[in-house]
Image (cartoon, rainbow, N blue to C red; front, side):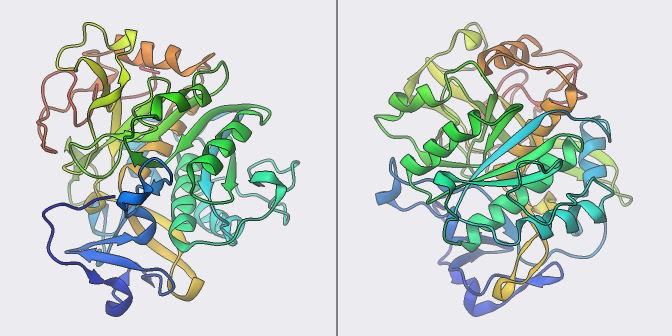
Length: 395
């Protein structure tokens, strides 16, 4: 993640600022911009482009107590914002991440217990017989740990579960955040029995050879989702692939009881016209799109100021409650919403064709206010794509 035109960063390590009921992770380098903590895993360096992926999550430094954006949105709130049922889900949602998350099972169950979701009763996180949650290691070997990527995994597994409580959540851990390892782990996710959705909350700024990796997603099998990135007006692979649902971000306003008031485009929602990916057929004739692949496709809450509650790694490796934002929130949420909708697709193109056919329908909330460097418009735009879902009929 790049942060142009920002003030000189301050190390969160030195500040030790509170986040929720825990503290910022002392063992990870990170930066604070105002009220936003950017973990080291979400910072992109020029040498990483095209060779190493970064996460797309941000953390609120000092969320206030209370409902909605003050203390982090709950699963019930997010479901209500998008008219998503509180029960349902089927088969498997695969979450692809990097490095090991040693407390994944315990943290997953803590989150699930707080919000009345199914818990995993097995004590063995890698057991194939697990009904609710399982971890799989790339090459069958447990990777080394990384706090930022563990935070990413916590967010992804918990919020996919929150949207589709009856789907089994499988976390696949790549050995590193390198391009080869993460894409090999995507291939491993595809091979899992029953997998219907694959969520990837990571990306790289575009690079000239990216289209040569589209074959990982251009298959008959599960539907792929990827966060569009957390810098407005910037495009990110793999969300730019025509065989991936690119998920952008919004900001949700609530009243004093935490109920929905309105939704606008988030200033950090990644989007634009791809430099390298060709225009897909399902964007043909869609006003405001560019001559090549245009992103995002669909969006949901991602602004850290209207972020969500996550139970994940905090100070000294001890887990605690955090408030997360970034398009890393919206990708697993949309994947879960599609899952709970019940429909299955042979490939991602089928889902995207349906989503774009619903543009302007009541199953989508057209978001016309907000700016990310691009402006929100009536119809499709580079901030929120076709808009946000209203119910599951658009899927």
